[in-house]
Image 1: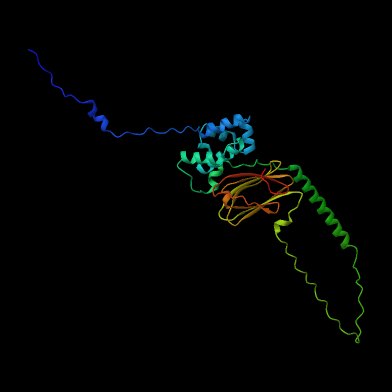
Image 2 (image 1 turned 90 degrees about the vertical axis):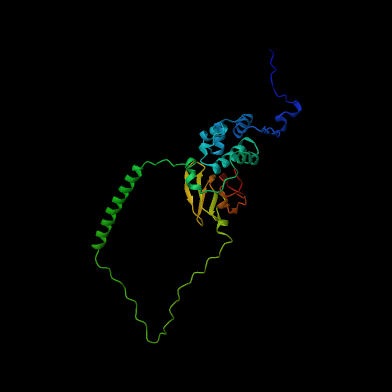
Length: 287
């Protein structure tokens, strides 16, 4: 006995899937990653990682990490943005576009943060100096010789006898008393137009003042000698001088007022921005 199977016929035009709203496919960003763009630009410029590190003063492990899109060594978003901007300038890329790409990928531009605690990754630590024993011995010998000579001189002077002092003649009664001479009053110094304007022309002089907030700074002479490495509080100033060149790192550069060779630098640094600067003699131009 034949049985007829029961089944529902569904029209193709009335398929339930046709009633579903269409979902647009995500648009892929065809830009290369920040690290890949920096690495390719460095290779195209014929530069090594070591050369980029020396010119930007960003340590080599941080440069390697950024080229692999690993920003964990930077110490936070504020300093990662500063490193991206610095490396982009060194390899010939647009720093503004790369920083905007970084902000888009990491939740927007970060708020300014205190500079000193996060600068441990970039802090230049001075080497401990060994005591100069030769200079200490020379100073001790000079002190002993001076003491012996002083003792002998006093002994000879005490045995020379009493010295006679000539008396001046008494003034006559008819002599009129003269007025006592008034002490000379030194004239006040003429104020210069600016204390900074008197800087020597044969040296490079930099004055930093924390105007709006505190800022961590590092200053080195041309021979690599560390002149200062620490926090500059609001209202404090530091002045550095060298025969050839001064190298600076400014954390929270927007809080700093900068004078170079007697002239104010009018660059507008943003709050929380990290700047690496070099200045030489003459007009203030970044090296």
